[in-house]
Amino acid sequence: MPSEFDLIKRHFTHATPRTLLGVGDDAALIKPSRGQVLAVAVDMLVGGRHFFMDADPASVGHKALAVNLSDMAAMGAVPRWATLGIALPKADERWVAAMSRGFMKLARQHGVDLIGGDTTKGPLNLCVQIIGEVPARQTLRRDGAKPGDDIWVSGTLGDAALAVAAKNKRIKLKPAELKQAMQRLDRPAPRVALGLALRGVARSAIDVSDGLIADLGHICERSAVAAVVAIERLPMSVLMRRYCARPIAQAALLGGGDDYELCFTAAPAKRAAVERAASRARTPVTRIGRVIRAPEGACSAVIVDGDGLPVEVRQKGFDHFG
Ligand code: ADP
Ligand code: MG
Image (tube, rainbow, N blue to C red; front, top):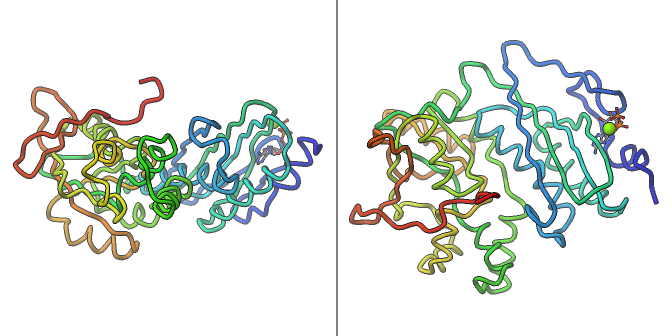
């Protein structure tokens, strides 16, 4: 069995060209660029809760970093440094090696240095902290939405939640369909390029990790506004379109988690600028609704059908304690 230090040396010690001092000391040393503020986020992935215990370890490593990169995207930040805390039931070196490969491949794609972490025995758990940079006046925050803003979302929604529903046998997908949906669940592609392109264009942003209604609801609360979204405008993959008449698929579309798309608002005068940002980032975006004044302090997102009538949504979003 490899020791903790063997694992660190073999799998978690990599070149850190953007860092003063990386893995190997009591703390890493980083130097922020001039004129930038640091954006810091942490996300924990618990085995059996955030990923299936039989999930491919390279995908687990990918996802542990991807969900954090998604938070950077939602702030308009460039991701720069990451730390990785990991608890392992046993020193399974093959698992660790594959996990680290998935993590590092995505890290290199985004120019992120792995600068430290902690390795311990315990129930399978990965905790990644990410640090990014953004000019102070160009941060994308949840509290900037204004009544009259357009609401936009990137990519398509619901596929990852459809994969979870299929794994839990609540919907049956054909093998090729399951593979496609699992790809969205296991290998999310964080919208970092879009977040950067939206600096100075979007007025507020969030990444959709707990379902569109819940996450757009967070923008509403923080901005003290409400949102009206047309269900017919929601962007769906070909796969989602095939199943969207089923209640479980509709729940996945509106309240399923793990999309890692960006939901953002922008003034209607910025429509052309949003389209330009999207094409620069090579990321499709769809205008799905409008920000309105909050009626009687009800700061939430309402989904309406083609007749403008509210759609009843049973699953409002993922909540670990809900
Ligand atoms: P300490 O006793 O000070 O906590 P450790 O022995 O835990 O130090 O870690 C030694 C070095 O290895 C530190 O630089 C730490 O940041 C790094 N490290 C430990 N685990 C990981 C990991 N999973 N990923 C990246 N770096 C790690
Ligand atoms: Mg330690």
